[in-house]
Amino acid sequence: MMNRTMITAANTLNQLQRQVELISHNIANSGTTGFKRREASFSDLLAQQINNQPNRMEETGRLSPVGIRQAVGSKLSQTFLVGSQGAVHSTGYPFDIAFTKENQYLKVRAQDGSIQFTRDGELGFQLQPNGEWVLATKEGYPVLDENNRTIAVASKVRQWNMIGPGLFEARLDNGQEARFRLGVILLNKPQWMEQKGGSLIGLPEQMDGNLNPEEVFTELSGRRSDEISMRQGALEASNVDVGKEMTDLITAQRSIQFQSRSVTIADQMMGLVNGIR
Image (cartoon, rainbow, N blue to C red; front, side, top):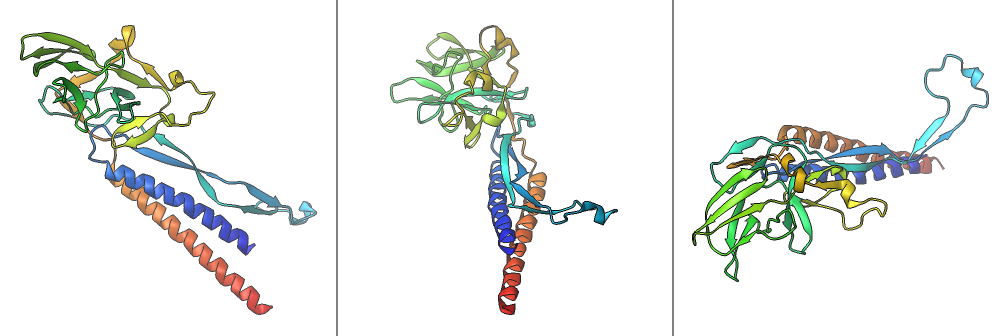
């Protein structure tokens, strides 16, 4: 019995540590533009019931369940992305954008060449070694258009105006004009997305073979581009409530203390049993 108690506590401690790491990640990114927090849910591991009373009628009036239930702890069953809208603040800077609907994300090109997604609208044109100016996030990830192509121009951008949902017009120093529609997706199943660092999210490297990426997100291009909802000259703050995260962190720490105490008590009781022998 004591060994089972220690195993239960040890299993739960391991899962609680993962929850603490998740909360810490949320707090660390509370100031990251467009960051979406994650929450954890727990479930019980396998429980075993031992029926210790051959005749249940002997305990008429008993309120607790008949039998002894032994479990092996709890596990963190799922972490899921919370896509609630963050506060939108006006900046007046024309290259800044903020989504005003939940679960819409920009498409960007990550360093490994994969397409990832972000709601961080702090953008700007960056000069490349080949002389082109590329629209990118502040971390340097190129922003993609609706056809997954890098948004690049041959000269410095003098004016940048949004003339439709996700559609921008650039006026260049050389007198030319160009139009670009930003690549935007709508998340249908946020729980499948993984954090890729900062405000970036993306599909897991190993996906369930039965899951089609088109089920996870929808491209807002073509006729569906009218569904894009964004505001120019503004940025969206993270949706992290630091007060709530600190409360959750304290609760998790109290649970860790309780499970640690369970291990200590179980060890002391086993010592007493061995002493009796």
